[in-house]
Image (cartoon, rainbow, N blue to C red):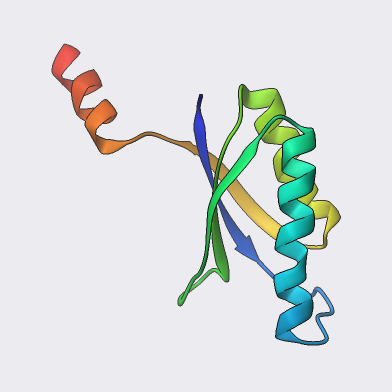
Length: 95
């Protein structure tokens, strides 16, 4: 199943406290499952983004609808398909 990463920024979302922000992840995970996507990992990030989310989805359409879930929760995100470096190495070897 294809793997995706989303860099997430809280941006202008009105968050009252850290617990409120943490509670969003449970809702996001449930909504991802409704799209047949699985939220694999999520990380808080020091740097130009606030969070990194790793998820898998059966196809680009399901990945797109999953990314829209983040937007519905008032989060800005940049989502891209990612590939394990071992898989990447085997593709490069074939060229």
